[in-house]
Length: 250
Image (cartoon, rainbow, N blue to C red; front, side, top):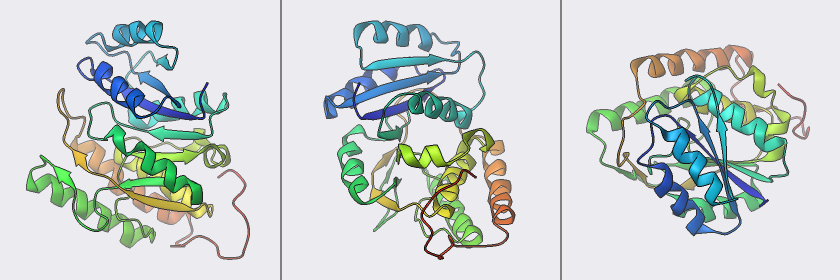
């Protein structure tokens, strides 16, 4: 078993799972992959079982129902924490997250507890998005920053690397959101605990094949979640600065 695990949720991603696994494996021999499949009706789960039989670095977690991105990651985090992984990644299956960026995340983790992939630090690095989608994404980031106080340029992004200690401190079963709001909630929780968070510039490319999981409900959930986080923090818009080290599940 290697020290870093890449968690990749899947639902109807049969065209992408073999190529994305190959791309991740090509980055380093020190990476394992956990696919979390939500009972994909297109046969993705069967392909993943074949891949697992072919390569011991690939693992598969099958779930009975489609429960959403956040639930898939929570299941993957629990799986990872039951083992000895030091670094745990979030990554999409559709190549919108370039596996070639993984070494940059690991370099950032030398001085961080959580590394966030950002599309907007020092410029816009998004490929094949319509203007309306780009405006929505940047507006959402501004909305999150204004209400929560988080200083990060891309708080809705889903390409991340956690130290296991961060996930151990968070009560994962109390993280209730999915979609963009899941990414916001996880980052906000780690930030409020005082963990060190770095931003890693990435280039984001719209999926090469398959269908986007974006929906209006995902957007509405994110809008609601930001206010839940604000009130949960008692209106506080920054981590406590009393010198305490990160600790205690929230």
